[in-house]
Each structure stands twice: as C-alpha cells, then as structure tokens.
Image 1: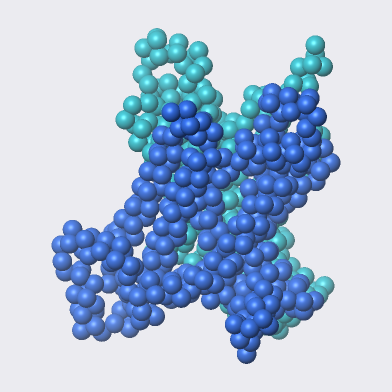
Image 2 (image 1 turned 90 degrees about the vertical axis):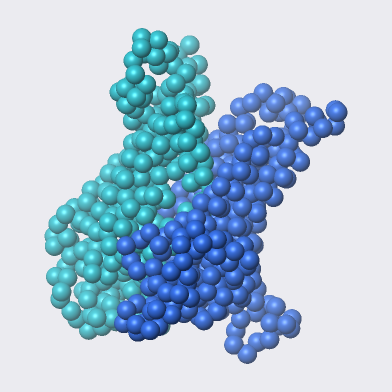
Length: 291
Length: 326
C-alpha cells in the first residue's frame, strides 16, 4: 500500500531527478547565491584591487588580473565584483514589483464579476505583447535611471506570475473551505486576501525565484543595448562597454565574456533553488502551476 | 470555436494597445514631446527649428486630431518619420526586414523541430538517462544569456578556429546573386541562426516535454502501447497531435521573442537587420524608429496568431467532425 502510494507520487513529477538531486541542487544554489550576496554586500573583501586603481589598458588575463584589464586600465574582475550589488538590486527590486503586480492581478482574476473579467482580460492582453521589444522601447522613452528601469521591467514581467497565481486561485476556489467562508457571509475581499492569498504562497515563492533570474536577464539585455546607467554599472553595462569600446578587436575576451558568465551563474543559482522548490511543491500538493 | 475567436480578439486588442501606447508615450512622459518625437535635444535644436518641428509634428493641434493623424500614418504605411535617418520609418524597416527574416525564420523552424523531437523523446522515458541529460542541458542552456552565447560563438568559431565569417551577411566584394554569393550568405547566417536557436529552444523543450509527459499517462497511450505501437510512431503519431496544440498556439508569441532576441543577435553579429535598427535607434534616441519597429513586430504577432488559430481551427478534430456531420 505504502509502496503504491509512493509510486503514484513519483509518477506525478514532471521534472527528472530524485529527492537527493533536489537537495543537492538547493545546496549548490544556496552556496552560489551566498557568494553573490557576500560580493554584493562586501565587494572589497572579494576584489583584489580598489575600483579606482588603474593599470596598463588591455592587459590579457594573468595571475594578477584574472580577466585582464579594460580600456581605462581598470581590473575587470574588480569591476565585476563591484557591479554585483547593482545587478542583484535591480533584479530583486523589479522581481518584487512584478510579483506584487502579478499576485494582485492573479487574485483579482479569480474574483469573479467585473473585476475578475477585467483582470482576466488585462492578463491575457499583456501575455500577447512582445515582452522584450516592448520593454526596450518603453525603457528607451523612460530613460536609464534605476527606478525607471525597475518599473519598466516589472510592468512587462508580471504576466507569468499572474497566470500561475490565477491557476492556483481557480483551483482553490473549488475547495470546500472557500464555499464555507462564502456561505458564512465573509466579505469576498477578506476571503481573497486572508484565506486564498496565504495558500498561494508556495506558487509565489517559486515564481519569485524564476522572476528574479528573468529580470536580471532582461536588465542585462537592456544594459547591453546601452539603456543602462553608466554611473552605476551592472554586468550588462560592462558587456555593453566591452563591446562598444572594441573588446573584439583587442581580443579582450575576459572583459567581454566574464560578465555574461557571471549572469549565467546567477541564473543557474536561482534555477537550482527553483528546482528544489518545484520538487517540494509537487511532493506536497502533487501538481504544479508553473505552466 | 469560441476559444479561438477569443484568442484572436485578444491578439487584436494587444496590437491596438501597443498602437495606443506608442501614441501616448511621447506625449505623456515628463520629457518634451518634440525631443521625444525627433530624438534631438535642446543642444541641437534652435528656437526656430524647434517651432517648425512643433508644427510639423502637429503638436499644436488638439489631441484627438493628433491621434487621427497618427492612426492614418500607421495604417497608411508611413509608420512615422525618423529625423535621424531622414526617412520614413516604414522604408527603413522594409530595407532591414529581409536580413532579419533570414535569421528569424530558419531559427523558428529549427528550434521548433528540435524542441519537438527532443521533448517527445525525453518524455518517452520520464526520468530516464536521456530525459535527465536533456532536461539538465536545457536548464543549463536556458541560463546562458543570448549575448554570451553569441559572443562565445564569435570568439570560438570566427576568431579562434576561423571556420565561419564574422559580421554582416556578405563578405565584401562577393556578389550575393551568384552561387558563390549564395554559399557565402549561408556561411554568414549559420552563427546568428545557431545563437537564436540556442536561445529559444530550451523553453520550448521544457514546455513540450512536460505536456508530452502528462499525456503519456493517458489511457489512449496505454491502449496504443498495448496494441504494440511504440517509439517514434507513438510519440509523433499519437502523443504529438494531442500536445501540439498549445505549442502551435504559442507560435505568435514565439515570433515576438525571436524578433526580440534578434535585436541582441544582430547587434553582436553586426547584421543590418531590424534588430540592428532597434539597437542603433536606442543609441541615437531615435524614438520614431523604435515605435515603428514595435508596431511592425506587434503586427507580425497579430498576423501569425490569426494564421495559427485558423490552422488550429482546421486541425481541431472536434470542429472538423462537427462540420462534416452537418
């Protein structure tokens, strides 16, 4: 009997890998995130030089300069470490805003009536808008400040969360406890925020992790196209500078590739955490709202 | 049937929303609309020039009239005027679109086929070796930013190995009309197409794999298996028709993601397509061009969505059989 149950649970998993793999992924993701977070909080502990220190320009990578130096002679690894904080901050801030928008829209969509219909329509329409092109155009209009960038990324980045929350809310609305609360005469808004919202927490947390990675990727693309703030560079801005200032011609591969690799590692770290969360949520509730 | 019509209506509304946002952005934002519509700033524009632009752009007219003129321009095919390029945005896009389509269309076809094949194969034995390996690599590839993938390709295949050319779609001095020119073009296209394919396949793979795995627990699959249907035939003849629909329904959106990715890819490979146009317009603050490109991309998405919905209506057995029965 017990074996049967376990078999059934495993069959429901939509992602490969067992519990051990999930735990290993979580550990790996957390270690990577911890390193990035430490680098963001205390860059001077990681960077070999001060951010204003300069050397000969265009030095190739060596034991003194892991990724070489850039056109102004700054150590690329040092710039990379000092850009960590800004990159993480933009990503987390826009993800938080996108998440708030998405959760609100998703809750409203399950609300029924005019509010529900409007929220559903808005979600479906936003899902049809070409995300990256629209983000690029609106970001160009809005200018390159951090507040503007965060807002624009969030405005076009909340739809997937809204759809996941909407699916979960639809699922919860069919549960007896919602019927009981409605029959007992509790106000609809109260039910939505006090009783349904806490039950969507698992979806929200899972979505947050993927949204942060997605927002960092979008920000990097915007900065790569030159929409970033040069006074407080992110990794995307670094790639833009490396590309525009002749990184290819000068064989400055460290400068060109290292920021991209850092973004990739960060995205992977978030993916590892997502993988664990997804595993857990499927173990517990047996279904996923990710798609 | 009604779900397809709803889908088409949503796509149409999204297109109209983009058009309205395009009109509203330069007029609503705190900046001066003349600067936002021409891309010039106070340093370049003298008082007289500013005034002439102000009237030329119709900013002295009432808002409703401006909106009418704007709509007439969008649907009349002008798409606005780029003062940076001194040309109609529509003609700029028409010049650059062929290069973009040569990259985007093959990338769509290749990534769709690749995702279908790998996704269905992986779902055949969920959590088996092939599935674990392919899903892990899809996750890994999904974390690679498009620009990193493109730069690695350039550094590795063009600069280090020297196998493939870098930059634009033709080598200088080669006539694109000849056979030699044709192969030269293919050689130039390989890396951009590969980069775009690499950037867009993982998410499609994940989607089709998860749908196919869900479907493989259905009874018709069990029935087909018990009749001895197995392997490719089971995946492609039995499972795919049942999971392909949401996959095809996403084609329109997919095109949007492709054209967005093309901005990055064309910038890295210096291809003079629409992506490069966008990327340059970002640098020059050439707002009319940016807006025109967004309008065209949205129109493409609308067109492809309508097309795929018609195909899906024709392919939907429920609707097909109903009309036969009548």
